[in-house]
Image (cartoon, rainbow, N blue to C red):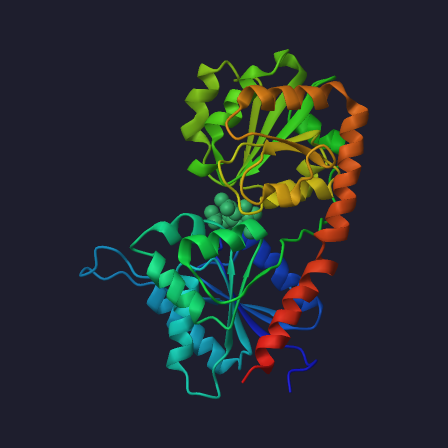
Length: 379
Ligand code: GMT
């Protein structure tokens, strides 16, 4: 019955700036373009939620009660998931990031009569396994929700192995890498560089992240502080959160004139197009969507070889990877690229090609559709 008709799909993700929410939003947009009906269910509209006649948003309202010290989101989310599933006859709920979305989906399905239950697909994005999975207060609940999902996917082979190792999940976990589809830029490279105050002969090192502790902004700034001469670069940070806590460290390292911050930027393509080298210092990443975003713009990145990053970056071919924590080696790798524009361009072009061939919507979205069709056919 669902062999090729458009599907009605509920998507739940964190709406704040973060790779999993961005991926879920872009997936919703691509699926809507392919004819499916998409229902986002979350406490706010996702950061990059598309505007499309087949895309709908269902807010989850969380009331606060004096009795509770901590407000609960899981129950109102599960009730909304059940309500939307029933009212919109959803075929499936695709939840991004397990905590608490997979548990809420499990509850939602249990609230519905047999025959009106959507299938549940859980996509693991990172710290739902690597951090919360290890937490005795969360791990068993994450494992339980995964064991009851109709399909589990994750964004890298690293994450698949970690999920098996940390949570002991026995169900098959399918690796569906992240994708990125760049939008057209609305400003030229020169205009953006002018806005950023980039001088003649200066290179733009670009970092994009939500600045959480594991992004190791301390190491990012330490690498920038090692680069010589100082007047050859601007470190541009597109921050998904408030950068103020790092201002003192910028000052202490004498980087005040070198670091340019833009917070919660929506049109990232303009900035991607203005970059010369991407710089990433995370201590772990399941994938690192930001590196892929830069690759799509033909810009190579330097990063630590952690987590799933080596699945995204072929070191020496599409970017450069160094051992975690070695800020000296990382600074040397950045300087090598700054000193050799031809190599930079070659790595960038290789990256752009790889992004298109391996990590584009045309390649990845049909893989999600195949998972959907498969679970919808299961009784
Ligand atoms: O798991 C997290 O820490 C949050 C999550 C997010 O929402 O940004 O990040 C993960 O998902 C992204 C999209 O799949 C990946 O590109 C990031 O590498 C991953 N972050 C971590 O693993 C730290």
